[in-house]
Amino acid sequence: MTICIGLIPNDRTVMLMQDSELSYEGIGFTQDIFNKIKKIDDTSVVGVIGVPAIANEVLAHITGRQYNQDKEIRDFFEEAYHSVREEKLYKGLLRKYGFRNIREITQLPKETTVDPSVREEVLRFAGNESRIFNLSLMLATNHQQPQLYTIGFPGCGYLENNVKLYSVQGSGSIMAIDKMGEELDKYKWQKELSINEGIEVLLRAGKASEKHQGVGGPFDITYVTSSENGKSKVVKPDQKKINMVMYLFPLGVDEKIMLEAITRMRDENVSAEDLATYIKSNIGVGIEFDHYFKL
Image (tube, rainbow, N blue to C red):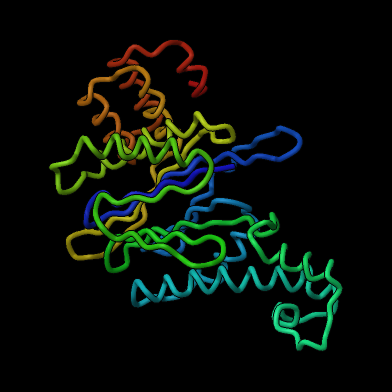
């Protein structure tokens, strides 16, 4: 179970936030894997919701290429999803019964018959009931403009490309969406959000999603932002620092102190220990803060 939240805070930036917990069904074991957000190139990152191993195969199709337009990367993204899904269908089931393509099941001549149980199994595998291809992906790209492009079953994508729009996929989505709306309402008359404000909105939405079973931290944030000359870069703040700031939300921290903490969280020259010192000097965190972050 996982959650991925995307946000376009301003006309130069697109952001993804995602938990980094991997659950092993049936045994109740979880593990932090730290890398559900994958970098494609200097303009794009992808959030993975579902089976990481299958996502790796999809992403292998779109990494290492040069993209000239936003639509080009979206088209490759969508085609990669279909290609891997069709390959899994063929290798996992069609070949088992001697078929090469699902059309041999669905478009047979009237005089040809297929065992009904075989037909049912194939169509169930190909449909959304199958857990074999349980995968959605959220593409955050800033090639020509900030965009969020989410793709899942049956393989068509949905585009968001306006400032202050967002997308949420995965477990705990309802809680995160509700919190995103509540937080963005604070900026109703503000045309754009700063990077700090956008990060705070994401963090609060991620915190809300933790109330749903199967979603837990640590959380990651990665964003793609462009300079005045239009050149984009991928920024991935330190995960420990992200979660130190997230830890503060239930404490009712003054907004100026919170934004300063986020500024220090984004600063590569500020270590996790330095951020912890600032937090403990300005906010009444207890000894459990030190224990949780192993300070």
